[in-house]
Image 1 (tube, one colour):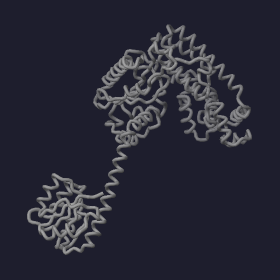
Image 2 (tube, helix red, strand yellow):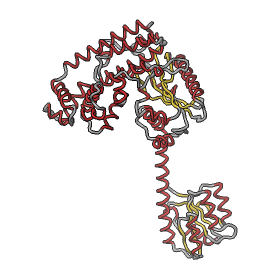
Image 3 (cartoon, one colour):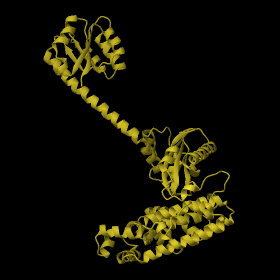
Image 4 (cartoon, one colour):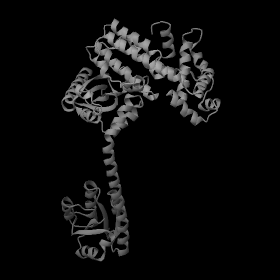
Length: 532
């Protein structure tokens, strides 16, 4: 790399001598101008890129120090080397203030000039390398920006990110002009189906990537970030970039955008879509606080419409809905048919709109399908036919929904019970060990030793046949036992943690809340029929 150099000195023989006596090419520099005053140098800088200026200090119109000051303020990347017969310390101090890279005294030795410019060449090379590296990093960051943003909002919506300062830093990093305290946000769901004519073709699939590209945008002051797909449903994070907009105006802007997106999907991709708000928050902090007790993206995924009744306003329905999720998460399918029957009958008694129930059923069966996949028993394997959520949308009337759901859940429960009975003896033995020793210190290693297997191999076998890690199974067993103890008033709440193997009461309370959605006190009141 050759760098561009200008020489500035009001003595011609010095200008020419510096140009001719030094082999600038060998040092990596090209003399592009020889000027007699700082004023000429300023004019040259304004029309030509210059890497280095070698200048005398004492000149008629604009001195070398004045030139250095101008370069420091206007062209900070340009390097200045001063040369002068003056030895005054004051000049040296000013030169340092103006970031001059070196200071040569007249008469100057050739070897000293060579040494100074060899060192300067290395400095320029390193700065060039650093600029190129930074440019590459910025290019990579720009390419990764959509991915980083997606991860940020996914972590916010699933409770993985709850630290306010970290969230603020990530917002700045990803170029999002919002704060955790001032900007509204919402989780959206876009349910997509292929047009009816295409559903019979097994080769036709929902064009997920194209849909994400269509939805991903900033529109009317709202930033839309697609998060993830689940069984034909795209979950989207919406962030209001207008901090002063009220909640009603924000929701209206979002719903208008979702309707527009649905219309475009129908016309461009032959995809039938319906979108709505799962849940909205006054600011990101509110979402982060909510995520400490539950994951908003896994919460009640009903479309939001201010004119509709929400099950959140009906405690009995909300409780049944929460219980359903708790049992699905625990892999306890045997209770689901009866719970489903209670839930649908509650919808009927409350005269809930049928489409609200269908939305909830799509969400519940999405959760069931996810758990079955996790357990290695996809629903298609159980029913011998693919499960399509559009079937729920096409059903007519609560009786049909009730009959269909109960029959399907009974089939799933029977299958999983039969599969459980065929578990390897080591898994059954390990489960017995947990049920006998749940109040003691149980570890993967102790259970593996009990069944005469290595810990690693036992862990893999247990997960393969139960769908849960051994540690999760122990936790679920203990919490289930705690729920039984809580129904008996003779046990003090603070004692129950110790009875099920938790010496740290605070940790026990945290786990209980995480798995059941209630604190132990709330659960006892609920099971006793006392109002919370």
